[in-house]
Amino acid sequence: MSQTITPELRAWIVQQAQAGCTPESVLQAMLQAGWQESVALDAMEAVLEAHLGAVAAQDATARAAAARTVARAAAGAHAAERAVTGRGVARPYLDLSGSPRAIDLGDRVVTVHVSLRRPRLAVLGNLLSAEECDALIQAAQPRLKRSRTVQTRTGGEELNADRTSDGMFFRRGETPLIQRIEARLSRLVHWPVENGEGLQVLRYGPGAEYKPHYDYFDPNAAGTARICERGGQRVATIVMYLNEPQRGGGTTFPDVGLEVMPQRGHAVFFAYDRPEPATQTLHGGAPVLEGEKWVATKWLREGEFTV
Ligand SMILES: O=C(O)CCC(=O)C(=O)O
Ligand SMILES: [Fe+2]
Image (cartoon, rainbow, N blue to C red; front, side, top):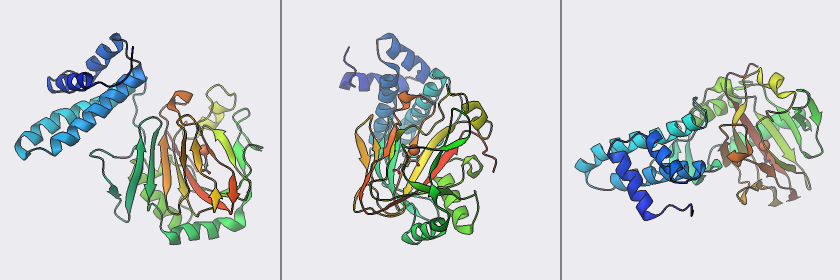
């Protein structure tokens, strides 16, 4: 069957939500009708969120009650997704309900440029100031070494031919600047500072790249259990751009043909609620063609990452 969201399907989903049907039962009905699970979940979320937006634009009296019902259903769609996929736990997320152009984090107003459902991804602007970017580069520069990647085969670290950048890690909370940025990221994605790994800074020279990879640890690799003793799996990534190479160096997402261009102070957030390719979070740093590229990466774990 065709897996597109028709106007009839939209109307039916909204009707079910307004009639008080549980999101689980709506989802079950869609699965029985032959919908693929991921498409059904996307459809439910998309329709309910869009409906919520439309309701908010209508007159005030009808608005409040209808919005409450549909908001409950939209929240339920997330819950249904977690139930169906065996994920009973919270994950880092951006609050993009109502399609905001900007998110006020208290000390900074971050702009929202692109949001994607699958992979769960957002491109953000103004996450770091130019001064913060420069300060991170300055502090990282003397500590750079050829990048190593965590080796899931053994649980140790090794040089990796797929990754030709230089890198270093700050300790979590290492300096007031790092503390400020970590607290901001925590507010952005509703995730405890303690669940974050130390901030990693990478420098790519001309020709350097990071071939497409997943940030989660391969569940089938022998070393993964050991790595996950400290904080569990990785569940989300925030890549922050600290400068702008002249050409090349975008962050690519081959499953969806997306390339995010490095802009100083901007960032790409993506989340993977299970360690599976179905999350479509395969990504890489494309070769830098001219100039240098600097990024800071924050990896978020399921639980507290002990430093
Ligand atoms: O450099 C990039 O654009 C991507 C970096 C990355 O994938 C990572 O640090 O895990
Ligand atoms: Fe990565």
